[in-house]
Length: 621
Image: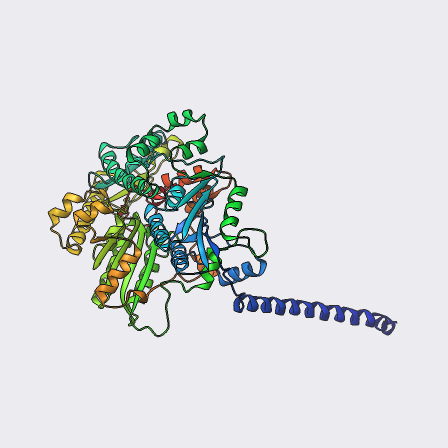
């Protein structure tokens, strides 16, 4: 009987083995197919053909950035296979490269600037693109810009075009620059949270939101100076590019409500009447205009054009490493708050940046280092670690040049002070030579809900640093001495690095923020310009060709590195809330700006060289 059942079960066993073999075969076949698809996508890219007599469409998306976001190669390959666009910000140098190449390309007849999807950009970044557009126009080719509506940043970029077209239901929203902060003192009092703040400098206002319910007169004075200077640059450029009357332009902005009433509340008609735009056109009308100038595309679905991202695949990007060159300029970019340890895109981790500087200074081919920084500062300790590595690079014979972006203040200036040359844009915010410490204690808050702290220690100072106990006069005195010593160190570093006398530095220090043009007059920077200017200066000092510069890029994060760089729980919670789609974009932006001053960078001594104005606030919107 048992043998009978075994014989009966034999066909089912064969069938199961056949099914198992089939599933294994199909699984392996699928895996091999996937590997083959990945290899094909990685090794093959279709040739991009630039249509003759075409328009180059420059359409920046997201924020304009100067540090590429590392993307896993697999993610990029899957994007190519599935034809799914990667939601990336726009790399500034890509735009500049495309515009410069198109200027000398006989296949490109004109340039179309579509800035509907451009979001944040700083004034110095937009001026860099604007100068590239000016070079393009000097070849006799036309630049036109169009938008459904223009915010201040979008319109500033559009103003460099020969013609500006606006949708009939659109608007040009010019309202000037401002700095408004949320002040938390009354809230902290109601919550019974004591924020013990220690600072040096009349103008070191980064912690004012914790101490006041309004902006101090000193902070208003300092902010008014640099805001006015930046607004003058912005408005003067628009007036010059659009050939507007200066008085009329400023009157139109200041009297916007009355002007809007004069055209029945129609913002598009107001923009046309005040000369801000040349014509009002729907998308269909604009399409007809472009077809008339460059003809229809090969598929007859649009006007004859090529997008700048595809166009980039046909040119050699600038500042890329080329084999065979033995005298190089290494270009490093760093943006965001400065903190100890590892960082990420948008956060300058001292350990990460030091590794990249060390890689450059240990490469015998690299004769000069250009550090492009865009930061309002952060941890004083982390800033000093980075500065020391730059000093070591100089000792090793490297030329070090710092290029300042929208902001290089406080900790940003700390690490820059010893450079062989400092290049800033006229609109850069820099200086803010000051330092502070901020330590909260919540003993009163806990008492309100019935929680009390008590205990013993082996010394009189064993309780120092306990947020659940009141801060003693001794602890407060020690922290204040820490801050004062840190301030003296900061001033000394600037005096030695800039070859100034200590009293000279003290007169322009005390935490005061300066715009780049004023900083040049004060001796805090050496020349005005952009990244290209800094590279040229490094080339001159190191006696190497300026064409030999190349970006030392961030390497893509693997899964383990991403896990290691995960935000701390509190930071992740706050960041997640601020990124939530449930919050309107304007509210998310404001919340991010207002919380920027919080000292959460993990300085081992709780000392921070941080400017009040956050980087997001310097994006022209």
